[in-house]
Amino acid sequence: MISDQVVHIGLSKKPDERADHPTRLVCVRCTPHQKRGKGHKKGGGQTGPTSDGVLRIVTDLLDVPAAVIAFLYEYRWTIEVFFRFLKQVLGCRHLLSTRREGIQIQVYAAVICCLMLNTLTGRKPTKWMVTLMALFLQGLASEQDVLRELNRPDHTGVKLRAKEALWKKLGY
Image (cartoon, rainbow, N blue to C red; front, side, top):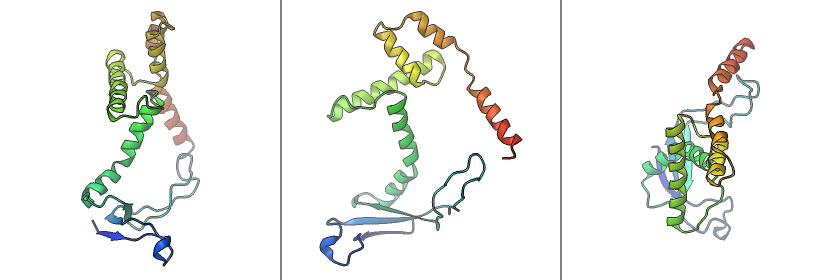
């Protein structure tokens, strides 16, 4: 941790043109990042601006310890990946309730469904698998449809190895 301070954000020197609430700036030491342009390794692409080794987190959480704010930010991608999985694979794009209890039930049910599919099939649940199970439970897909899908060979590892071999062949 480098610093933790309450600041007023905004470019204007006039107080009425700045944020009307206190803002906290937490500075944390991080690994510096060098910007790499297109053409770097597999596929290239922009990788973000160069970092000076200081992560600046601006928040309105004044009563939370700075270490907790830094910890939450460190795990932001884990949280993003979970919600992406919840929305895209498990089909929870819309909330069925706006109450806290309703949201909890919806999330718990989706995660339990995912765990059951994984336990019963031994595979990572996919969007199609979740859709197929929903169709089966509604009576719109037969048991043979489900068994046919479960018995399909999983070529994920083969495809990944072929892709890696291609990149090696191209010199990346």
